[in-house]
Length: 227
Image (cartoon, rainbow, N blue to C red; front, side):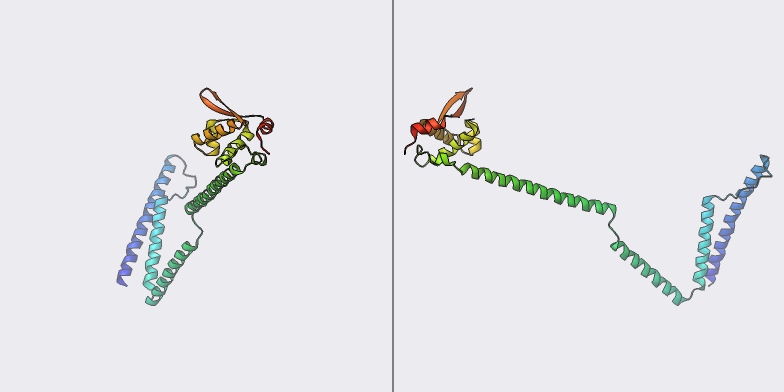
């Protein structure tokens, strides 16, 4: 108890000193007003914020020390237990609180990344499916070409693919046929040679490039088709 009383006395002395500083400032302010001929003016209360804060802090410390001095041991333990409980509750509240702006932005970024991945996956799948359709289309030989009995042998079906491509385009270069039919240059040249020998296409060279051109199909069929 003696230590607590000493602390209270020290704090009260500090409080008196602080209020003394406030009084000095107010007196100086009044002296200035007298010199300026404003004696009849009501002097406003002037307390610097720092000194006022220090004074209030000292007051709170005095009250705290007095409360601790008069508090029983069991009451103090109970109060500390409540404080610990409050701290734990605050910690739990923080865990359950809504996510912060930064966490939310990271979460949004992750969602955008996943969405972008889904879009890319769909786009890639679409390209693959389209490629499959093109491959399938290349292998589908039109009925009028299947009815032609001009081309015979193991390579007849491949030459018909080239002929089907020419039916769509009318004329194509050797490079275009290689890219479209996904075959090597020698195979395309061999098919073109067979088609030319059958009277179905003409092969000409322009500016160093081979160009295959479709002939009149009705004339070719009338001349070459075998019943």
